[in-house]
Amino acid sequence: MANLGTKNHTAGNHTIYTADYDAWLDDGVSLAAGATVVLDPAFTATVTDVTISSIVVHPRHITFMLAGGSVNEAFTLAVQVTDSRGEIRNDTCGFRVVAP
Image (cartoon, one colour):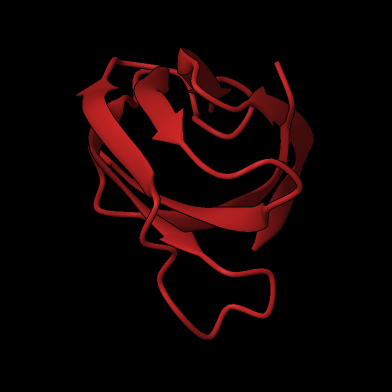
């Protein structure tokens, strides 16, 4: 599992994020599926005030919209993608919610 980094997300915003998998995919291979789950920083519970929507799987990256969160809240987004050969990759990205 790779950590895609930590990002700040402004409370109240609806923001589209991109996870790029071009370096992981071999030539001629594309993404076939993608999914996300929002977890607390200890990976033990689902965060209820953050919404992920509009997940779109492109051939070499996925995009999703993130909304919600409370100021000073921290959470982890677990991302899983499957390529056209059936290989699965699991990654995480940390988020901190900041004031507008």
